[in-house]
Image 1 (cartoon, rainbow, N blue to C red):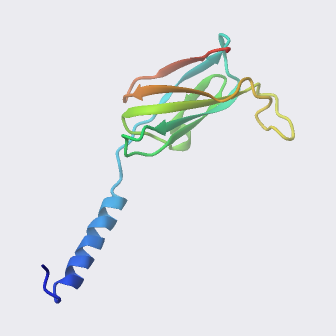
Image 2: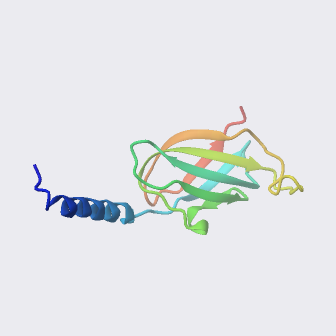
Image 3: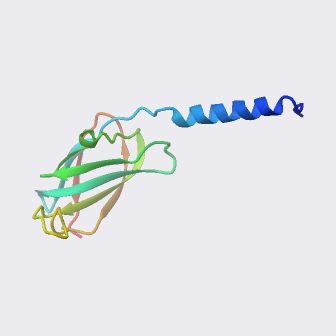
Length: 127
């Protein structure tokens, strides 16, 4: 049992450690690669890297242009581990209500384990 005089010090120390733990930056790495649909590069789109519940790291994101993407472009790295990758692909013909154009497919998701330095090549299935 803590003495009454020690309680404020204990609370302050605990809060300080919690703040330090929250502000510690997690080292991340960029993800880059190519995304195709029906054998062709996706003209425009977005790709998201949603961390599995077992990962303590940020969500990654990149824009797709002519099939290529890199999280470096928007400074959105990830940590190694299991992810759900979500891809949104568009025809690249802008419209007023759709700046990236018409959707080529419903959002496509696939689970994948990601490691540093390994470029991705993803083919979105047509069905």
